[in-house]
Image (cartoon, rainbow, N blue to C red; front, side, top):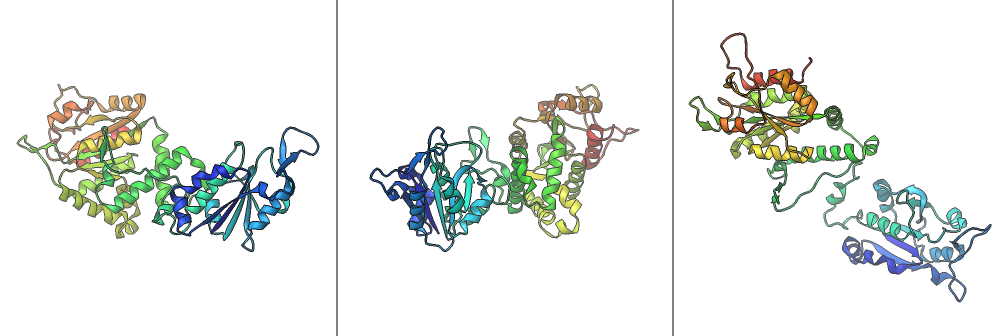
Length: 431
């Protein structure tokens, strides 16, 4: 591809001799030329501007040297000839991709009060603007256009997938990116990016991209290509953010008690995975975290989730797929808290549950807990224990200790999935 830039100030273009653009030029992927418009002026003073017809402040760039400079560099049959101007079409990734397919583009950098209108009317094919603001000249805009177009050329980035996955490539803002170290000044890389599960990583990245776009540039969603899964997630975001609070649930396999009151780690129960995920989806829980320190157990859970995320289960049962899409498998509770803090900008308040709590403990009833959540807002994490329930240390460390679910008699041995559904309904269901 060939890019020719017509300018009065070629010394401004030093940035195009560095980084990706320089490498692309060195490899012969892009030929980029700077043409000084003054070199094509016909008088001894190399005059490239003159006074405005009809009067007015400032000067206007003359047509003769621009026409001559442009004609001197034309190599393609129909090059795209561009004027950078705040009056032009807004420059975006779609336009960059369109220009990247051209054999030659010629960019004319405006200056002073503008360019003689005959250049606009009889020479150029496009007027392009970087945005609704005014610069001293078109040089910065020309550099932006040149770099955006160059990096889209095959081989310019080394890995062509890079240009396909960045902001605006599919109409959305890009997801967050991280590198080593995994922890810096107490801030951790999200665990999902470290577990090697590519299906979970794909889903996390897509949701992050949708969320960033929804928060920062909702106008882009109008034209973006969205799947049914994307639309369901955006609908869920809308529902979640229409309320002053955000709710998360965590099922802990550790630290919990066995019936001897010993601290243990329990194993995966498939029903707990499915049923609590479905209850969480029903009551607009944002994420359902499963805490399991044992790597083999996490791998088994990931295999199950893969079936419903990208396997046959996603097609066979879309409703189950929608529920399990919000499940996150993490080694420790601290990882879940850190992820919520990253999502919400604040640590969640912890709500501990237990079937073993006594009436004389400092317990919070469901009506009171619901009022606290609705009135105070913020993020809340409901902690559910497997085995014989959460350890006393964990319950003591929580911000609230929720009253157990009592039936009509002395029997109090509900499964955690049954108790979870009842709790969620009491806290967030119909009044």
